[in-house]
Length: 317
Ligand code: FAD
Image 1 (cartoon, rainbow, N blue to C red):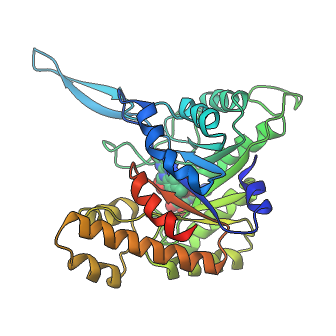
Image 2 (image 1 turned 90 degrees about the horizontal axis):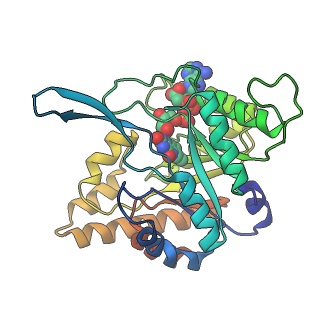
């Protein structure tokens, strides 16, 4: 079923979460066993992230370095099939502009349609770590609104290099990302909002936000998005803090602010267990306030820490 249908049919806030494919060479079953306690909260859908290639330098015996491309977390499509099969939930694969040309995107979407996937989260992706800025593939997409248009085209039976629109119609429900604290490349919040609207105008049916730790940022974001004429559901993304290191890592990766009140609590912590407890309590309080606000769904970034999300969800759902 489509994410938007799940939202329409539910009278209360839904629970959902995002998982990362295991690192190459690690077991999928172990990961699925790890998330199975979260099924207690009846997630109607689970997102599976996509990780594009990275470049590493391999040293040869003669001292020469060879630049090789590697994918550290392959398997998004297979994991979607495994999730649907084992847990009878909808899987939402993340589809990137980065690393794909339009033909490869079309083929990936055909595969997903054939295995029964009905939702995708369309994203641009970031530049590989070794490159300073995002560069699309030759004949790829520059921005997510273009990727959304391609998916909408397939939903209308329009495939690449076909003259007529008589192809089989896919029926993907398309989600896109939104940034309560602005996407880091956007010169202004207003500019970013205009681009978010372009994604929705192209056919996106719901928005999932980047993580935030201050609910006011989400409330302000929703107000601005609505004022911009965007009416689709806006699903807040949440992540419980689990380590002290995340205080610096998360702002630098996701370009977000940590509220002073959270920092004050974290600074008092003496052990990792204290930090985890503060992170859990903060996420519970954030979640409860968002439920009261009437959000359609709470979407948790598990980042391989399903047990922490379980503790939060136990107090909220
Ligand atoms: P876009 O919407 O294309 O926007 C990118 C930037 O370009 C923004 O600054 C925007 O304002 C600007 N822009 C957009 N359109 C135009 C235009 N026409 N002209 C000029 N500027 C424009 N990354 C992964 O690699 N894998 C994942 O699985 C993944 N999952 C994610 C899930 C969520 C919920 C979120 C919030 C992010 C996720 N990301 C993931 C990260 C995401 O790929 C990056 O944040 C990326 O930098 C932007 O993606 P986007 O789809 O928001 O890009």
